Image (cartoon, rainbow, N blue to C red; front, top):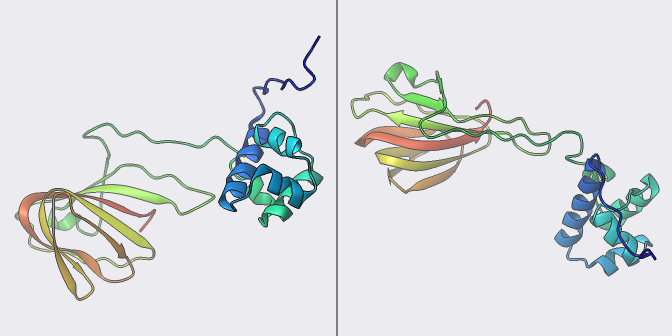
Length: 201
């Protein structure tokens, strides 16, 4: 005799159900709600909430609309990520694509570690920057967004607006990139740091 409560196996093409289930669970937990709380708010049964979150049932558009209202989020947010698989870029040690930037004329080297376009948040580009001890000119940069730098090797004098900081291996700085910023001197070279910027900055 079959178990009436047994779950059917998730089909291989059920990405939509998994996405909706994961997004419902994400928003429910972010709101501090239990499955019973969400059931009460949406008028659905706790068992239905469980089946939706575990992707063992396909929710109708009416049900999804009720869940979105109960969670106080746009309906579209429950489908985010269902359109295509998420990409990942792996760069092995010593890899990266050499690119030309404003400081290239001064002998600064830039190795891009990849760039992914995002439909749900900011797109970021990590770059390894290498400055030679002989470098004499250091252009300052201004662009929209936030920038993060992590020193990997050597030491630099780094300017952000009117402030200057000595950054050594292991140090980091998170900054408003609309303020003029950049290294102004190599204290111990070669200096290498990881810079994470908005893509295209």
